[in-house]
Length: 448
Ligand code: GDP
Image 1 (tube, rainbow, N blue to C red):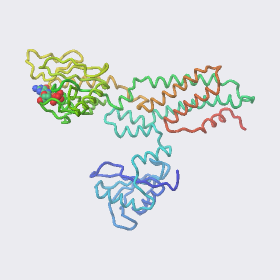
Image 2 (cartoon, rainbow, N blue to C red):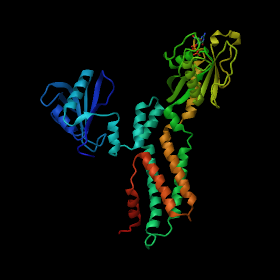
Image 3 (tube, rainbow, N blue to C red):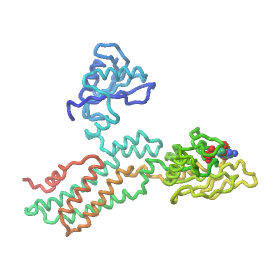
Image 4 (cartoon, protein in one colour):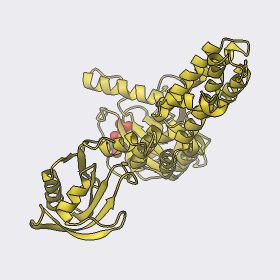
């Protein structure tokens, strides 16, 4: 930590007006800021009442709860001050202005507190990602996933893998560097390759997760598609219970893809209204159609909505083999005698977006579908493409190392193990070459 580093401050709580606003200050001059504005510094980590002044001895701005977290036991690892003030616009503005007048303080940039926490070793990269996910989590399962990530599920596992890799690498390198000396066994490749193989199996298992972690993080995508006027927008509005799409009797009014995020039993489902899927000459609409097709093509599930009073239209909603459910809308207009039974076959839903008939069945089926696709995903190690890409590189390097076999070249094996360890270090943001030497000297007591 550099002592001449800027001290940063920011409003850390939500948009005013609110009951309480939390303003954080981090850096070497945080204490000075507190002394200047509150007149005194409370016991570490103990809440203390204070009147905040716009400068030493100046006019009172507000009454506050102040907290003092001396480094390194703080959120950022630096000296941190937290001010809890009344959450009014003018109060917050006055406190921030007063902080800005303290020498050496400046407003924080986005993410700067977390960045400092990461730089000071308080959080590794995967935990930083978990923190971001926790803030954006919309459903219970997403919250659990994000919290695990923040608490170090992947970070600790990656560190464990990396530690074992470095030991294996140390074995091989000891064999290379000290092969003339009597106190190191000649061939250490066998045990090192055994470690590489078991790591390969563990990491391979973590990758063979059907991408459930990413799917939970992103939410399952369900595209609502079908011919114009079938009632797609009406269905979306019904499902979302708020007006998000324009419902109109004229065809082709929904020009773009509209997203609605649903929480179904704790699992996130993103509904896409692709009402624009139809042939059109209008260039703006054509673009909407193109996007609608693309997103529907990537969806986990398509709800193909048709007008039950019209001739059946069995057009394929998207490219590829996306699972599709038939939703026959407007059954309120169908003669009672012709009405399909509500206990219809799987993937076939007679509904009325107007009256709400059949919607409970459709929502229950969606919830079951989301549950089946995402259950247990909160425990996945891999939650982002970044993790997956890094772990794939590790696996590839381990495969190349194993490919050498126990009669293989030590320098090649050592290099592949080094690459694999480096990838894991990049995953957590902790690449450090010193460890290898540490392990060599610790395990072999060469003592020179
Ligand atoms: P979209 O083009 O597929 O998005 O269709 P809209 O949601 O805009 O609906 C087209 C028209 O059908 C509108 O006039 C709706 O009010 C009407 N509509 C939608 N769903 C139903 C339904 O279940 N029953 C009846 N009677 N009309 C509906």
